[in-house]
Image (cartoon, rainbow, N blue to C red; front, side):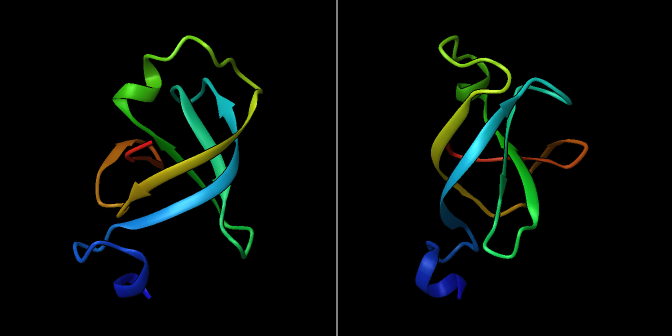
Length: 78
């Protein structure tokens, strides 16, 4: 599945609806098609000032879940 969705380095592109949260850090909570919740963030996203806690968003991001920024928060290209 990764070979058809990713870039060959086990990265996968996602297009999801999410919710902005400030805890455990500025991040986006989203879920996969099976309802599994996962949390992503990036340095670029953390610096945005136009979004606040509780805002809904549509997000495109790429990650391979190998870079954990914090407890259960994964680095992503948002």
